[in-house]
Length: 272
Image (cartoon, rainbow, N blue to C red; front, side, top):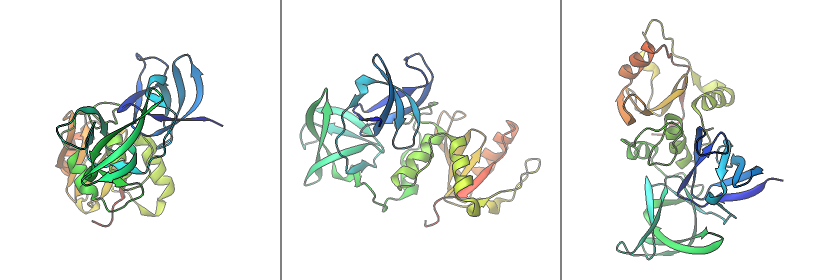
């Protein structure tokens, strides 16, 4: 049995080695469960329950878990000391963080959390969260809410994100599972949803625009974006150094110059 712990920081880096100088694999978000397989001094190796992404976390970011019943759906929420906008800010929690809501007080909710093994509480706006399992959230609005957030390789906290965490966060708010990295997502979707895969024929940069449908994920080698309209893609990318929307034709031609052809087009959101 793996030891089950919980992310207690707003977010925390997860590295490929037990060192702050190692490569960033991903980031764990407040309230997510982390299963520990190995310990080396102050470093714990394991995986996130959310997407089974493995890596090393410093133990200062972990606590024994509390049950969670709500998910943050705003870009980020500030935990306050009192149910009052003028009260002291304690820390922020990013989109898709998981929280233990103790009670609802008007337009506020009281959440419990642990710091240094002590049980504490704070308050966040009720409209910043949704009950775990809820499916009444507008995916396109979520995608647009994240526009202009800076790009960072390995980033998953909404202070900075990469292409695959961007689409993963959107899907997470809809209770749709996706692995962490673009190539893993591609393999998962191609394997699990063979009958729903559309393969556009790209020849010398030419393509048929009718292949592109709103609500589709578009995969290249090591890159992914989502169509918010039939002809508009939004994606976190190093070209703009942020989440940006642009005409799909511009994106396709630019990536073809980098010799990146479309590998998969999958319409993940059909009700829009």
